[in-house]
Image (cartoon, rainbow, N blue to C red):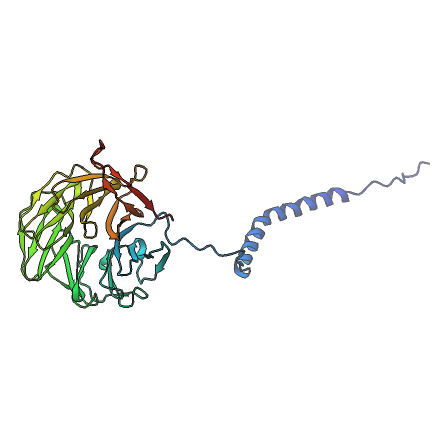
Length: 364
């Protein structure tokens, strides 16, 4: 009689266990992204980063900085004003320091009456003044502003705390208390006044867009529009005495006057580059002009004959302001530097050639 087989068949447990492991693994894989997100959230909430190594201090002058205004103090220190409210002091030995200001708007110009009192103007109608040698700066309150545009382009000073700021929408603003309080000299108008010369005894000469020229004999109470031989914008005006002055502008525009600004004659500057600033350098007894593409012009006191050149063939930066410190000219714009013009070289083919010309830009 045959007995039932006593062979024991293996149970299906291994297959069941394998399926369970696969399901568990799938669940873990599916949950993995959520676990990662949860870990990142936890780290962001509870783990605070700690500084490693020394803090990097940005340089006082950065490659992106532009400096539109420049002034010299009685001790020879230069102040340059420009991008993002930055004012840099350049000492006689070349060392740099930064003056703290209460604005982040671009500053377009700066001027100092003496070792203590100074004023700076810029975008948005911002006017800053200092009464402690630049240690602190204060935004002037209640500056007259336009609803259209308020960039102030230039500020000129005279004795006794007098200053006049010029700019967009006909801005001609005056102060008599070292920059604390300002009022309009003319109603708002659709023209940009780019510069003003203060001649003394209440006489003013203003230049602006479209070659426009204004004069006043009574400190700005009354104005006369002067016929101009140019229709391109005039950017700067300067006088060496109450009668003789020079104005420069776009496309090489150059005008001279010998009667205090009542009449003007156009001269051939020899260039087509934009000209931004004109300076009477009393120490060297010469006129000096700075402009676009590294352009400079210079002339003797009579301003009849002008020579021209570039500060450096390798540096075609624009410069909106020039000041003299001793025998050296300092230029500010796309960069800042010291320029030694040198004496004319009459034997050279280039009419602007000089002996000893040298350009030394400040390095960021």
